[in-house]
Length: 78
Image (cartoon, rainbow, N blue to C red; front, side, top):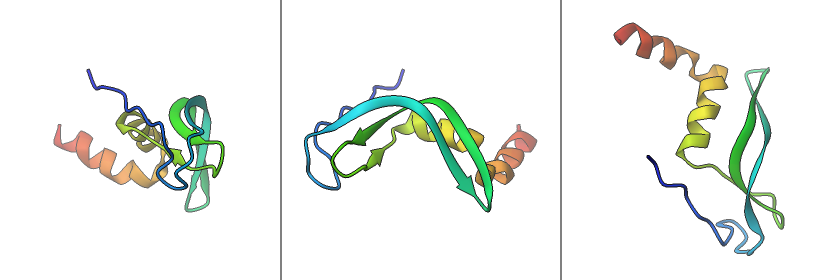
């Protein structure tokens, strides 16, 4: 099982107000919206920086239309 990352200081502003949050996340790719429900990631309340661990990125990639082609290739090879 993968160990969760622990972040205490924001990598962008150096502030100490970064914390793990869980919320619905949305993005856009080539004009198409997509969302990831209940995504866990770190967010800085000082500058708004968001930091995603591997699991969060995997979930975003699963929902994003940007990765449809690579997902189709992966399934074809299986």
